[in-house]
Image (tube, rainbow, N blue to C red; front, side):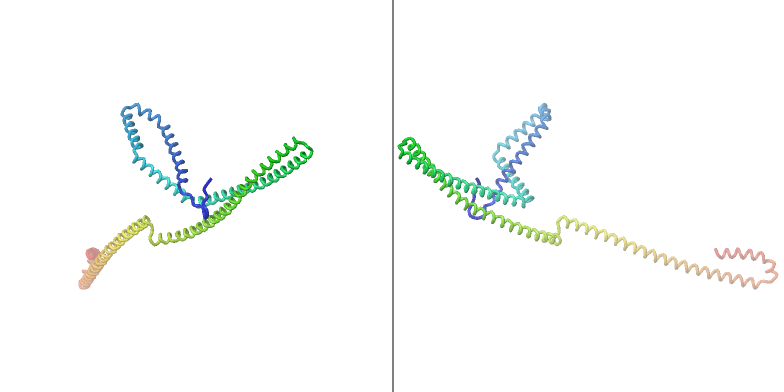
Length: 332
């Protein structure tokens, strides 16, 4: 039976039992895995043992393993690592299913309280049964004594002795049952008191657990909000590093693009200025050529007006053809 501590809430068991259960399961898994691995690699081991070099290496490895196993320091280190691993695994299991573990603990206490109630009810039943038996034994003793008295008045010695002994046995049985009844009464009173204390303890445990869970949910909600705010203000280290690198790359590319734009603007400005200068030069040269052409045309017209009329008629056709050639020369 489990020890019950009074008064107050029963203490929550330490993790030793959980560690023992999980450790046993872990050992079973390790042994099963080792057996399966040996079964799978046994043919390869047989093949390797045919080679003396491999056999020597295997013997060396086996000797090293035996040394590590027999060394007390190595065993202590391995045991500490094992306990650390079991505690870590137990903590992970508790973190994953914290609420259910607490609820199961309370339900277990309620079941044990129900078992105590059943035991108290059984004691009450035994008490009533003993009271009934004691009453019957006393009635039987009275009846036997009455019969013995009647037999004595009629000189029936055998019947008198038989009934007297029956009455004595009934009285002795009633006395024994009375002592047992007194013990059962004390036990029933004690267990009734224990039941009341256990009920109070379970109620206190349930209420304190409910309060703790509500407090945990409130703190968890507050912590979630604070964590989001901290994530915004501080940022995650990895995310912040990626963000900074992305911003740096973006600024670098933006600087490069602005440099390209400035370079293009400078080049295009110079090109436009050069084009404007060339256009102005060409326009000025064109105007100068046009002025020269107009002067030469005006000079030729004046020469033709001053020449004699016959000469102009006789050479009309030739001059027209020659003038075309001159115009071509002027245009060239």
